[in-house]
Length: 199
Image (cartoon, rainbow, N blue to C red; front, side, top):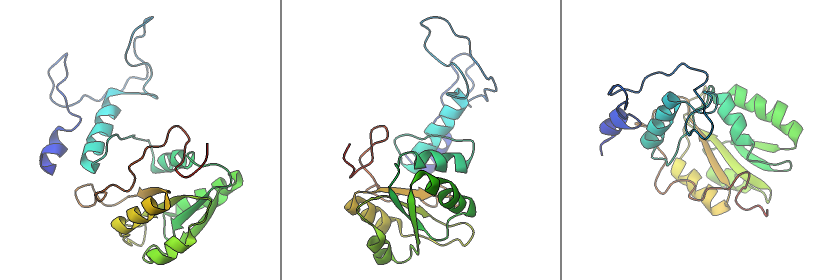
């Protein structure tokens, strides 16, 4: 299926009640609930509009599943909960200022450690990986300098080092930038399970 077809149809199913071909915007906070009833409960946990967005973005990104957040910082904070005290992260040196502050001023208080590196030098990034490194964190194009990271090289490094590879993206759309094949990570950790760490 072509990208343009995916962009139009992914996550868009006709509404069974009305036949509308675009997903309606559901602004409700709560849904009718009966004992034993399957379906939606509260919009903070699930919402048909958000689910359509998540499916659409996942398809456009070439992923299996998507999760939408109300802010990028909310998404970043959630990703960091995959780590534990004592874990180390190698981070691109020119990440968004809010990300840098979150890592240095908040996450370090919980025992996470960060090294900020120039990701244009993959040899230096590889050399920064330690026994306790659990994640490499890139941003491409970076904000605000618009530096690019070689995603194929980064994905290969992450896979070979058995660390999670995270790529934040503010500016480029899935049409202009997608994860290279093979994907950076193939294995999915169980809840709070990080590759390379004994459980």
